[in-house]
Image 1 (cartoon, rainbow, N blue to C red):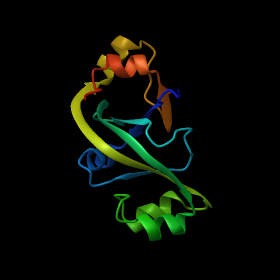
Image 2: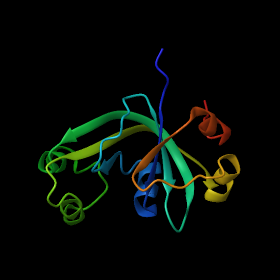
Image 3: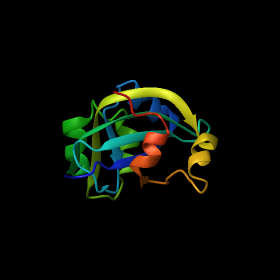
Length: 142
């Protein structure tokens, strides 16, 4: 039986809010995480918010060229074309984490996270967290 993974990603507040409000269903990345459909995605809203604000399930990981990503998914990425092109400048590959079943949670501050994991540092790109920490944060709901 495969254990589900818990991927924590730091997202600028502008985009984190779009994700938890389901206006943005694909989070763009330059590096492909080692996750699959059905794994959990936890949204950490970066400074100045500095809190976990939601979680959902990974629907799929999309790996394609930036041109194809824009042509096929521009309505789901929550960013304008100018910023998209700038983000993937000189890149041959783009990664999209498609998210489903997003749930907004009461914000869990960085301070509260550090009570459970003293050395916790928000990820620059992403990081995996243990299911024990995920469950301890009381964000897993049925």
